[in-house]
Each structure stands twice: as structure tokens, then as C-alpha cells.
Image (cartoon, rainbow, N blue to C red; front, side, top):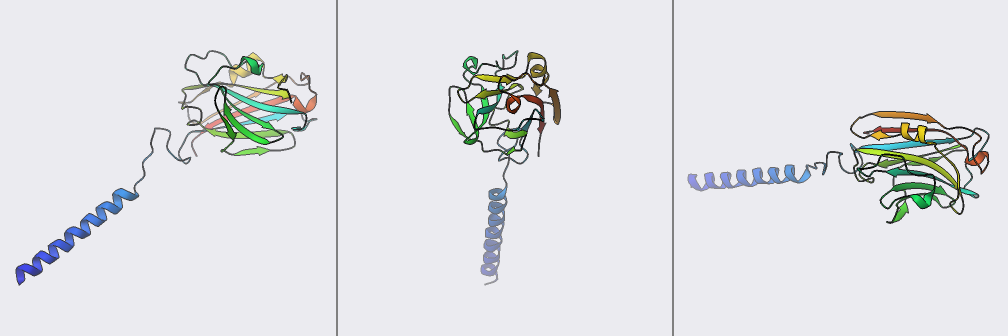
Length: 200
């Protein structure tokens, strides 16, 4: 009888330990990649674009793009002409339908990251996972009419200065553009762009 009680206690103790082990291993969540998983702890890029102080965001008469070239062999920022963008470039667009995120030659969807729009600025946040976890990001900012004909863009100098090395965390870069050079008027005249790479 003493041995039976001992076996019962031992069995209950083993069941208890197995249950605890299963609970601990089932609740632990580890990142799938070095950039973290699910948003928190994941590398994120925020880009804020300000237009001429005398203008305002005007999605009725045009569109606002941020384009990202994440190809390993990239050497220059994306072109000002949307027709010259290569397949595999990523972009965000603000237009009359709101914020969109897409890949040239691929799909487009509603931007899932954070996005803001003010009187004379807009800001978007994307994860590096959405951009294919690149080592380097070349960017350009482009404003267009409703037919995607370019109004304004960052010249080569400021666009090159906006290049992000994703191994340096945090990174903050700010560039200025020549004002009053937009063919679409002040509403589409890029004034300042800043980019911040961080881990929340």
C-alpha cells in the first residue's frame, strides 16, 4: 500500500512537470529573423516629406510618392520618371484614395504601417521586412499630376544623401530640396525630407 501511494505521487509529479514544460515551451515566442517579428522589435523606417510652406497637400490634383530601391547592386536613387522604375522597386503613394504600398511589377495594397497627413506634410512608416530586409536603401520623393507626370523630385545630391545603411541603428537623415522648382505649383513643391531608421 505504501508503494502504491508512492507510485501515485510519482505519477502526479511527472504529469505536473510535463504540464509545466508544455506551458513554458508553448508560450515562448521567438523572432523569426534578426529584425524581430510582428512589428515590435522590428526595424522600421519612417519618412516624413514636407512641401513648400505656402502650399498644402492636394490629392485632388496630384500624387505624392516615396520610392525605395533595395536591390543589392543599386548605385543611384530611383529615377524621377515613374516609367523608368525597375521591377522590384517598392513605393508608397498618397493620393485621393489615401496611402498605398506597392512593388513595381508586383502587387499594391493599403499601407499597413503608420501614416499621417497634415496641411503641408505627410509621413509613412514601413518595416524593413516589407522592403525585403535590405542592407541598403536608395530613395527618392516624387510628386506628380494625376496621370503620374512628374511635378517635382529630389535632385541627385539630396537623394544620394538620403541613402540608408540598415546596419546602423538608429539613423536620422534630413535633406533639403530646392524650393519653387515644381512645375505643379506650391502644393507639389518638395521642401524637406527626413528619414529615421529605428527599432521601437
